[in-house]
Length: 69
Image (tube, rainbow, N blue to C red; front, side):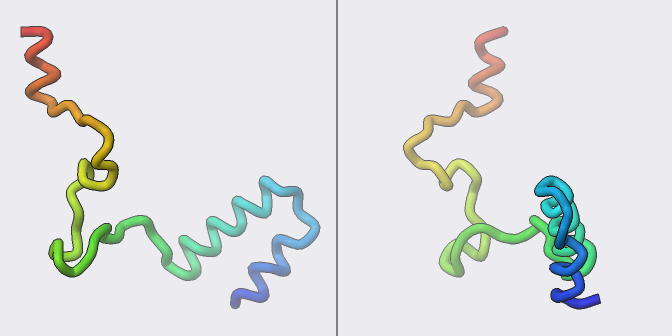
C-alpha cells in the first residue's frame, strides 16, 4: 500500500471517513506519531512547555495547592 492507495481509498467517502482513513494512514503506515521534541538545538532539542506561550501566566501546582492549605 502506497500513498496513492491511501488517496484512492478515501475517494468517494464522506469527509469524516476521509479524515479517519487519513489519520490511520499517517499513523500506522507512515509511522507518524506526536512524540517529537519541540525546540531548537540550543535548548538541547526540547523546550519547557511554559516557554511555548510566554505571555500566559502559568500557575505551578504547589502555588495552586496553597489556596486549599
